[in-house]
Length: 141
Picture 1 (cartoon, rainbow, N blue to C red):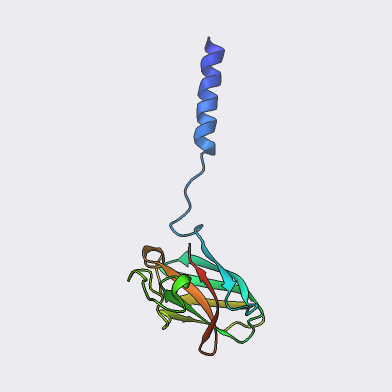
Picture 2: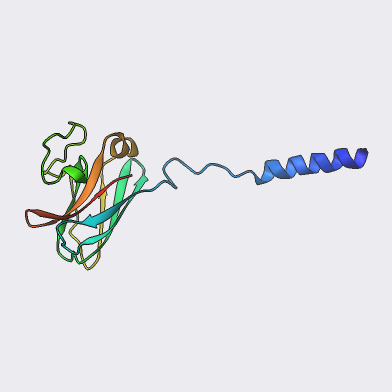
């Protein structure tokens, strides 16, 4: 019986010592968007949103978009061509909420003043612009 109690105490102590601790707020969360081509543009990729210290780093990896601009928009991609019938919350705003760095090669990295709550509180999307045309878009999830 004493051996069983001792084994239980050791097991309980070892569980207490190996229980993972939570990382600091925002240190492990990431949000993403798959960026899909529009109108056979051939532009596609991914956007990763990394929150840290009340800001958001946006990393784009986009094919066939070298030199194109990018933006973080309110609304969802479904309504890029028009907001007719779109609920106000989902309507795509043509003017970016934040301009992101232009795509250089296949990448773009921008840090913006945006919290996780603001990013995820309302629908947002990331769009790749070729002049005035949106050639790819992805909803943030």
